[in-house]
Amino acid sequence: MNQLTEDEKFERFGCGSKCLIELSNRVGKPISKSDILSVFNFSKGKIGALRTSELIAVGMHFGLFSVASSIRKKEIVVREFSGSTGVFCFTEWNKNNSGTWEENHHCMLVDNIDDTNISLFNPQEGKPIVVTDTTHLTLDKSFPHYLIVHA
Image (cartoon, rainbow, N blue to C red; front, top):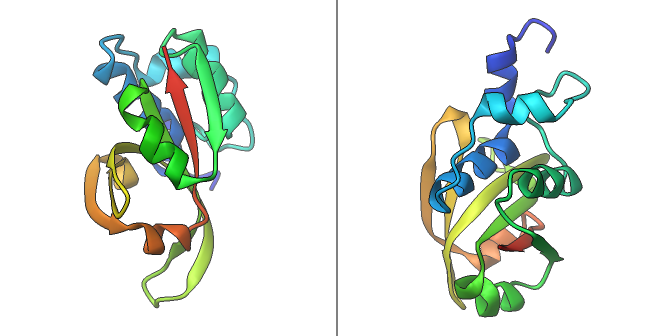
């Protein structure tokens, strides 16, 4: 991991930071990677990696939101989504190429959600990917929790 450049580390570990950048563009208060790096001291060589509490602190620092609620129940997310500034989806498990589940902490932004489907902005591999029609059953195996934010 030490051989990676700062940019490579940000691309590999910075899903939360990249979701904050995407949210900042959506709410008309754009921030950049250098803005985040200038206010947050990343540890353990994982440049861009943010725990939920750290993502909240950075988002509030830049005025992207002032209220944040961590929720596990998707029913609450479905109900609250339309009135929110944004919703982050954090997962802890991912199915690998061989079909087995492995620990993998990841952050995405919810683009849309209803009782059966969810659309996510996914910053994997350094570029945004919109995943549509992901069933909640599949997502539930990733043990998601959500962060609903309001201005």
